[in-house]
Image (cartoon, rainbow, N blue to C red; front, side, top):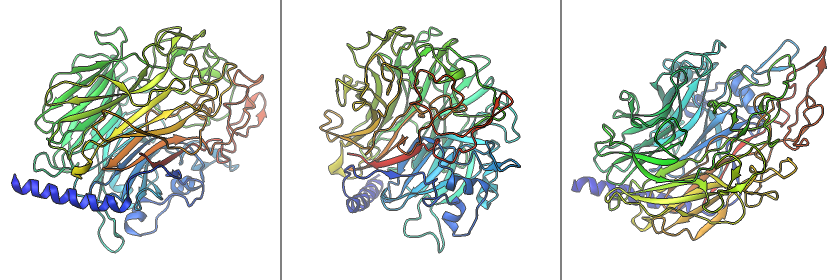
Length: 636
């Protein structure tokens, strides 16, 4: 044990030196992670690691696509913090095929991005995790020994203490083009590169294979077993217990039987194999958004949110389970706290869908789960139209949790969630739109609580940055402090609409009273240096506020922002990522005759012809109407 503690102190000292060279974080110029506009484009993961030239139709398309990316992930290498890896749902390869006339056809993959920085986040190289359908590189062939699907997303990333990076993903859809959804979850492994092309920062650079953790069924249209909503963590504090174990969890949807469960697996051999899936949510009927935290004594916690659906006894609550044996077994679920929900909903009011010769998107999309009958979680045009006339992206209250693996003196777990601010929950909306109870909305704000695993107590949930104007959604939290002097440092990120000129607690983000939409969202961050007791430093991260309600999905009829933001930190160095629309080219949808309630403010640039009563597909998808990107910046 004395030897292990000495090793831990050596690692901590090395990390202090590395982070000191980067310096503490101060938000600066935003950095783009997704270079899909020939700036300079995408590079094969195989080429990135080996120096051997390789390309294919997907990489060529990704380099020029000006396509969609959302749901970013980010992770700083704890032993070499100038190395930062990112990921996202990356739609850049969707139009990698054309028809006989040269028109783009939406048959290409949606895949998990792999974005790499070796200078502390100042620049990123864009790539894809190996295994997408036309990846014939040696890495791609290795991946396909396990991967059987046409799309991959819901990216999550973790590092161990030996330079290995793990990319988790939900993976679905049939490469043969059938309606089978599969719904697998897998973990891809990246190890330190070797040889002449390894460079000065080789960690997490060389692809080493993918392991399917759990398989879904082949039922069409999400009617079978479908695994989704992933989270991953690795033990990286090198204290001699549970060292380098990898933990992975997800939500399992069962379409035919109903209900959702939280499942968990662990790997004790660096991600090569995983244990059999274990259900940890027990009898709770409606749960989502699992998140893993590992404390300084190597206990493993898994937090998740329950929904007051009426199908079970649970309400709108945050639960947790705990393992004291390196993820082998868990306690029964325990309620951490209840909250006032902030779940955007409306009444579905579909309108006629214009006849179209070819779809603008692949058969598979962003993996929308079914809502209650007659209820919509997002709203737009045509089949996605809602009775309120608003246009908005889906969002629900969700929790995120983390712990400081380098703090053996405390068993603190830090939890953030976006819920309705008490006192605002009965704001009449005057429409079918609501976030708390039918007919009522409220102001979404970011709450924080600190759970003490030693005592089982938690602090009273408080607002990180209480505001009277603006919604705050999609929070994340990070705390890894190998430097003793940094113990107690916690970093947070969220989306904030305080600069929304049309803000109202009664309306969706970015929606004005006349149903037009506007630029309204920024990424914000905060830091605490006293274990979350106070948050004295809050900063706007994004340099440009953007409109999250552009109708870029489901044949250009509904917005989709993803389901989360991400932050990663080491001591005072912290980097956050978010989905961004500053590069989106607005336009007119010619199918809207007459123009609908948003007065064109949510429409994107598109090109269509109308022949014999039928609209063509979008003939210019690379012209910027789909230009949704992942940006990042240092956070406080």
